Length: 131
Image 1 (cartoon, rainbow, N blue to C red):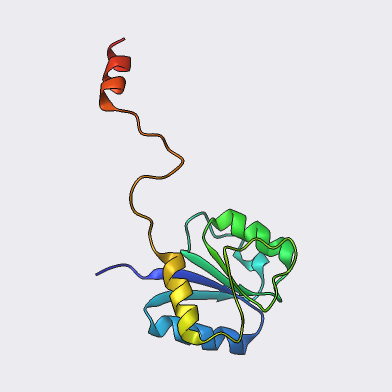
Image 2: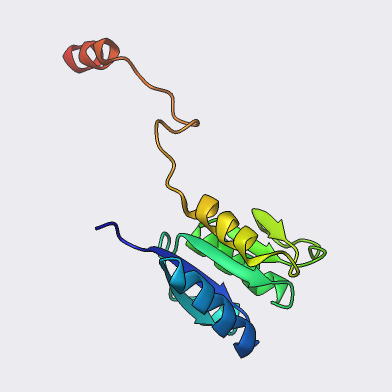
């Protein structure tokens, strides 16, 4: 059985958190919610597969948490705040099916070689080892 993808939900509105948590849990995600970005300071890199928040979250604290966790960030807002780091934005009035699709794409594991890493042929490695 595959491990569940983990999503961190950041918002102070308990109704929004409960509704979004229910939606994500019924689609097979493990969801943890916090009310302020400062509460997530103890999470390490790779602890979550995605961060989900609204524009009401303080920008500076959210950016620090996004850099610390290094996961794709999804912002639910009609207009993105200045200087906020996010990978994808979605209007709050968007259908829930679209939110699920965005989360599914954000949490997908990338396959294949990484673009920033140059592959070195084995023959070059063998020559360097013998020299």
